[in-house]
Image 1 (tube, rainbow, N blue to C red):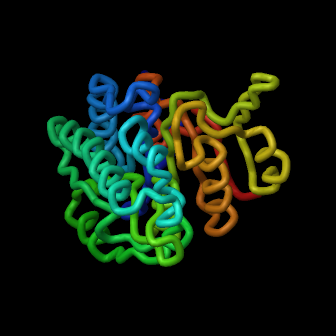
Image 2 (cartoon, rainbow, N blue to C red):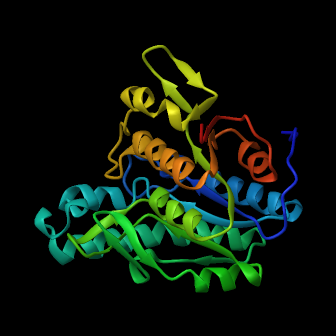
Length: 273
C-alpha cells in the first residue's frame, strides 16, 4: 500500500500505537496468537520507524490470552471478585506471554523492542493509573529503544488489584509525555454505528453525549470494555490534553505503517471540538 498525505513529524514528539487483541489473537479460541499477522505488523512498524522522526511507544491488547482468566476469576473486580491471588497470577502470566510473542517478533524484524510489565511498575485506583514513573521510559526512548506495554493486572489502592487496559496506560503516557498522536489498530474500519452501518470519519469531544449511546463493547470475552471503552478513553484524552487519535483497521495490510508515517483519514479520527 502506497502511503499518501504524510505529515511531517517533529523530532522527539511521541506517537503512541496500540495493536488490539482482536487483531493479534483469535479471541474466541483461548491462547491462540495470530503469528502471521503479528509478523506482518512487526514488519510494518519496522518500515515506518525507519522513515518516521517521531518516537514510538507500542502497546498490545490481550485478546484471548488474559481475558479468559480475568473473566473466570473476575479479576477486574479486585479482591471482592473472589479470585484472590490465583486470578492475579494467571492473568499476569498470560498477558506477559502474549507480550513476549509480540516483542520476539519485533526483535526478529530488527527492532530493539523492550517489554514493559505494568504489574511491576504501575499503581492503579479503580482501574485507572494513579502512579507510574516515566523516567525509565524516557531513558529508553532517548537511546532509541522501542518500549512495548500491554494491558495488565496491577495493584489497586481501592480494590486490592484491578485490570488496567492498554488504552488507560496510553492515556497516562499521553498526559505525562510529549505525545503528538495516538493510533489504535483494531479489526474494524473505525467507529461504526451498526444500526445503520455508518462509519464515522471524525468524532469530536462535543459528540460524546450521542456517540456513546451507539458504541458497543466487544462481542468476545473482554473485561476491558471493547470499543466503547476505547472511544471513552480517547475522548477523555482529546478533552484533557487536546491529543488527536485515530482508530484504524490494522487487519488491512499497510494501514498501520501508513498511519505511523503520518497519514490520516484511514479510520475514525477522534479529536477535541
